[in-house]
Each structure stands twice: as structure tokens, then as C-alpha cells.
Image 1 (cartoon, rainbow, N blue to C red):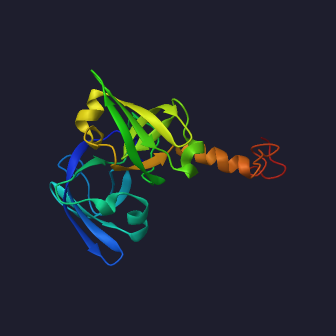
Image 2: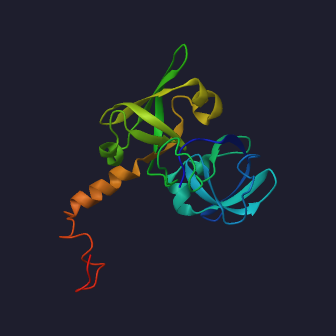
Length: 214
């Protein structure tokens, strides 16, 4: 589980396509600290597993499904990437609950620079529109952000100086593709409502044997 608070801007060292999958080599001096084989690191919002750890770099395998549903397949050596390690148990939840499971790819439609922050408009795939609301949370390229205004086919964001300086969103231009992950809580609520979930008559009925005193 991640929080969408990017720890560092890493860099793509190499992307090797192997059949319908790929192997990605990335540089990141912060996220590699304490990370070993089998650990998870989010790359532009995609949870990847470290297969070859190093002192300042790591390698991860990217399967066909991930390449199809994210922007990772379009990376090239030298490209910057947002990197984040999973949140430690008991750590600060600075952003919101982020799984690192991309729900869709969107396009940056417009950006308007301001004195201290930029206003950015991003396309909203139809199958994700119901999960995005005004002032709700969304993850864009692994960055936890607050939706300013949600429309039927697009939404707007306000990017503060820290986000502009420390993440790839400061460099994204109209036409660029970005990874989206909507708030997982909204998806769970929808699922529960769709199945008409009802609470049991007593929350302990299934756990307490008959005849025992509660």
C-alpha cells in the first residue's frame, strides 16, 4: 500500500522488451535504501516488484497486462519517473490509500501556469467518471492529488510548487499520457451497494458458539 507521496524523481536506465513483457531498470538512490529482492516500489503509480536490487538502482519485470493498462511501455532511457516505497505500518498517511493498481490511462489536455501553482485539465475515461468527484482524491502518475472540479469526461487539478518541482507532473505537457488510479474506497462502496450488502443480525453471531455468554 502506498500514499501517493512521491519520495524521489528517479530515472529510467533501460527498458528491454521480452516477448509480450518487459524488464525495466531504474535509478533511485532513496527508494533503494533498505529495499531488497521481492520488495515493492511504485513507478509512476504502478506497483512493481524488485527482482534485482542494487545500491542506487533496481530492476523490475513488467508483465503484458501492466504494459497494456499503463504508460510504462512508452518509457525510454533518461525519462524521469515518480518513485515511492510502500508506507510502513504505523507510518504517516500523508496522501490517501493508493494500491499501485492503475485503473486507466488518460491524457493531459491543458495546463495554465499561475504565479504559484498550475491549473491542469486531464481527460477522464468513461468507465472511471463515476468514481471521481469534486474535492475527492485521485492518483495521477503515482501522485496523490485533490480533484478541483470533476466533469463527465475530464477533471481539473491544482498543482502546488512542491508537486511541480518534485514530480513528473511539473514537466507534463498537453498530449502526454498519464496513469490514473481512482479512490479504492469508492470502488468498494459501489461493489457493496451493487450486491445489496446487509449487516448480520448481530456482528458476533458467527463468532460466538451457541450457549456462550457474550
